[in-house]
Length: 431
Image (cartoon, rainbow, N blue to C red; front, top):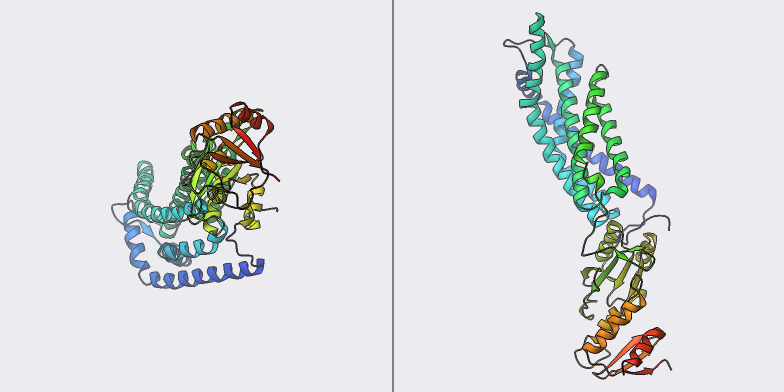
């Protein structure tokens, strides 16, 4: 297995994915073209109002020196307004295309980011056109007055610069928001910060380069430096965050000092499996039926990937009941797994007793030492006043235990010796 494949992934051919992508892009393009035509009916009034705001002179000093350039700028403005208008539809198409291949946290982050940047884009467009750009042009015009020059400004060039500045601000906000959202959701931390830096900065600078006029190389350098510096400043803490921790996970050390993160998947198995408290330091997630629910399997894979889980301990699930793809994903992420088989253990006693489940939890080792395991087992035996311990390598079908009995699977010799020294009888039922 060379890549992560979610249980919800559809195994379609590459060509089918391309066909779906082109179909969605074509739909977006058609909608944008229609909206561009609609906006073109009123774009002259909009641009006239905008140029009135941008005009720095007491009397009008904005002119059209190149009619063909003005026509191109006019249609560009109508197209950009069409893209803003089609924002919710574009968001829906992007989400529909990519959701099947994204982890739950990635889907949430993507949707949150797209809606946030759409709203911020509209607010930025309004702010720059009504406040920022008029003040900038007025400030620049003041230099002409100080030198005695008479200002005559090209309307098309003014709009191009305005679009470039607005576009750059939107890209800066997009890059900053994706870093903040990813950091808050635990997708971005110090260990993968270089991966995020490369893609965020690379995409942002490429899009800035595409929109800036070729006649203004100085503006490109200035905006590039400002954009990169601002994004680095916003992401200062996010790029230096330690590895995220969730669901109560803690770093556990084994005898060799190696760090482990153990996640307890508390699955009720459709109401057939009891609940057992996890050991100290284990994280816990609750589920209804992991083996039957693709979304719950994706949730576990997502948590293993985000929080660097080294082992998943399932409560009542049977490992053989999981889809092979799910187990392959855990192995691909370097995560071990085992089960307590609580759904089976709950049937060993005719009375309502959770001693077998607690004993199964107490028997866990790695990263815990054998001595810690033995101490936990003795505490459980004492708590339930157990007088007889039955043990075997496999669970015996039809085994029924008395209230003072408990079954242990594959105990170590040291555990058996310690139990015997504490005056509790032992019964080997392997045969």
